[in-house]
Amino acid sequence: MRAPLSWIEEFVSIPKSVTPEQISDALIRVGFEVEEIIKQGADLTGPLVFAKVLSIEELKEHKKPIRYVGLDCGEKETRYVICGATNFDVGDVIVAALPGALLPGNFSIGARETYGKTSNGMICSARELGIGDDHSGIMTFAEGTVAIGADAIQGLMIKDVIFDIAVNPDRGYALSIRGVAREVAGALDL
Image (tube, rainbow, N blue to C red; front, side, top):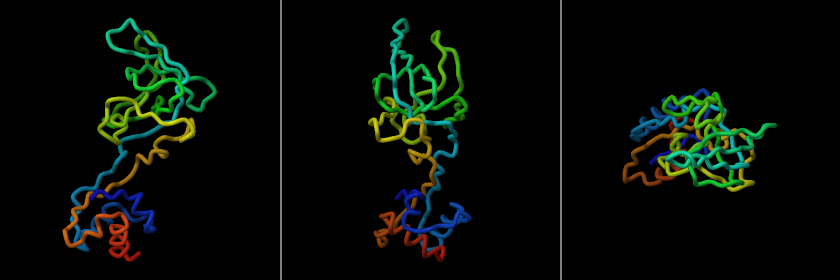
């Protein structure tokens, strides 16, 4: 059972001074096996924002599909990036990593010249953000579901601690977040 700390905290108020390791130790004390503590997004830093696709220029002189994409990142100027994905259109909302961002795998984002154009960032897939294995295309969102220019790390709740807990057959209640939260509260005397 994977239990994100952010979900557990919807049921129990855990002081900020309590570390994930202390929560894990508390669960072990009450008879659970914590197989792993996953610190999702620990190797990701912004700026990472929601952006609207304003324009797409197909660069056809290359062997693979390359697009020069104009983005509204909530700034005064349109930001342009080079992207090889083709699963998004003008008007779609995507996640853009801006220069200065650091993606999982120590992949630093900066402005660079490529394919004869300047790319000022990167449009991201779920896999590139470290939040899924889907690398088939860019994550897209319906217009109006997120604020353009808003922090995507916070908006997607990318940074979280996830407890991978082995649940014994006699403790089926712990297959729910509410059950895990109850055990955490009891183990930490909250």
